[in-house]
Image 1 (cartoon, one colour):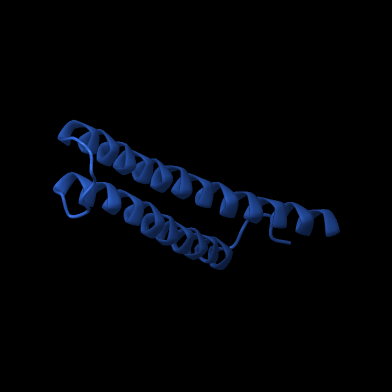
Image 2 (image 1 turned 120 degrees about the horizontal axis):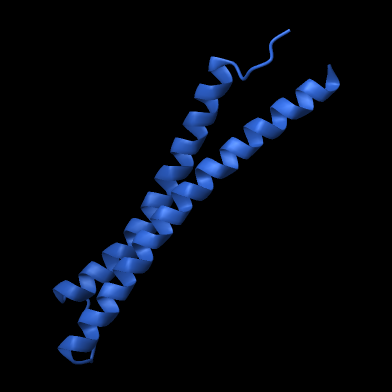
Length: 93
């Protein structure tokens, strides 16, 4: 009777977490990229230079926060699912 998560289950969970992480990096990266495009003048706005700098910087910060929270949420989601699955399996024994 095995009382621990197997290596196969652990690697499967790690792959899922990595895939979720990639998705969050893409989403946050796109948002941060829009902010960078504003800062570099690729996307023109009819505002003053300081306003564009502030808006672009805020959008970059939002993109980075989305990446950080998304990665943390992905790890917590996969970890909690793995633990819950293990608890259910132990309760059935």
